[in-house]
Each structure stands twice: as C-alpha cells, then as structure tokens.
Length: 95
Image 1 (spheres, rainbow, N blue to C red):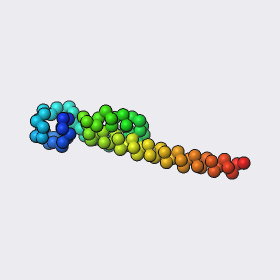
Image 2 (tube, rainbow, N blue to C red; image 1 turned 45 degrees about the vertical axis):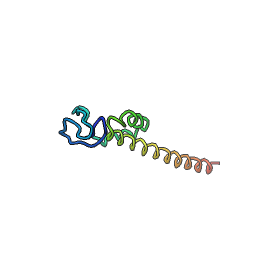
Image 3 (cartoon, helix red, strand yellow; image 1 turned 180 degrees about the horizontal axis):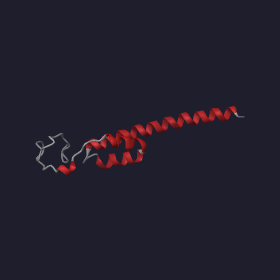
Image 4 (cartoon, rainbow, N blue to C red; image 1 turned 90 degrees about the vertical axis):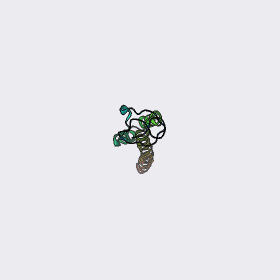
C-alpha cells in the first residue's frame, strides 16, 4: 500500500505513514489491479484519463491503467498500418 500524501510504500496495517506522519485511511488502499491495465488496453482513452486522475492518489492503479493505455494505443497504430497496407495491396491487384 502507498501513502496518499507522500506516495511512499507503507505497511498494509499502518495507521500513520512513518515517512510523513499523515493518518492512513484504509478506504484508499491501492491494489494496482491488472484489471486496470486490461481496461486501458481495450479503451486507451479511459486508461489515459484514469492515469491522469489517479497518478497522485493511487499511483499503482494509475501506472497499470497508463501502461495498458499506452500498449493499447501502440497496438492500435500498428494494426491500422498493417491493415491499411493489406487493403491497399488488395485493391492494387483488383485493378
């Protein structure tokens, strides 16, 4: 788990951050679930938005959503280039 104030890693059972002294709320636990990466991969814009919103409060989840969005965007660009090249080659043979 990470401190919502300083972002440093702390013990799961900590009540107060040993680094900055801020009280820890158990409701703000940041698991960094792989599901956020999957969501970011299939919906890169949503992943980017989640990254921007969570980068300070939930750094692990933000990182997963951001990486998923980045990978999804790159895969989308590569597939667009491949398919457009294939369609152009196919259309050239039809003339």
